[in-house]
Image (cartoon, rainbow, N blue to C red; front, side, top):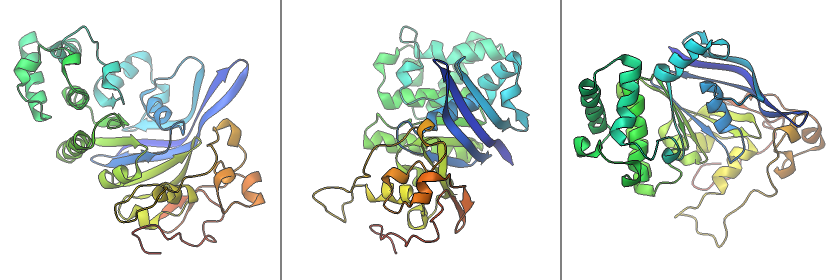
Length: 329
């Protein structure tokens, strides 16, 4: 069953008398219990997509298109319905959990406040539920740690607290905006494993935002690659590396370090990424693409089906498959 359905979402910002596109024509869906990865470099529009799902826009930002959660139109929700939607339907985990938790209040106060205010629970019952949820996400000595402050927790533990908060709200959709970026490899694996376990056990829908294709392919059922505000490739995560066809997706795989293929210098994508406003009428990747033609630089490619996926490239059927390291050509 479809939990979230986004169709033709475009977001623009008005500044100094000009209207600038941020994301354009984005469509994706998430089913119950499904993990969807949204991958791209900084500034590609990943976080704005997540904020649009939560409807966390500034006054100068306008969203067009459709965002439906369980059939309800998020963009047309009134104040009361929107508050309920954010409180109990959808939760968001940010890259820096310290920015989302009041540093002068205890973790216990952070976790129980919503339970008491939203569900009318007594302090005792809210505390009991919070302690149980903390234990469920792997926080030891939960009762003792309820009295501690955010600065007494590591980054990984604070991410667990944020996940715990989502569970207490009974959220059915979890938006994880680069939750592992500031964590060491071991802690990163623990957080990713926790997210995977919870979505399988509880049927949560998960939108996992990251710049790491390998991480997304390992955790998610489907992966969407975003560049300059648009989806440029979407396909099943299984064998994504060998199946990827957009030149940008393939370049991301090529730029990874590998223990099997030693090189004095890793391949890099030349040039700098364009913003969505700079690439409105042409392929945004064309200035950096070794396969670009004049047509690529003057026309906007549609997102079309290609080998069990969707690819935004007019030359996708002409370009020979790259010999990605460790994959078949």
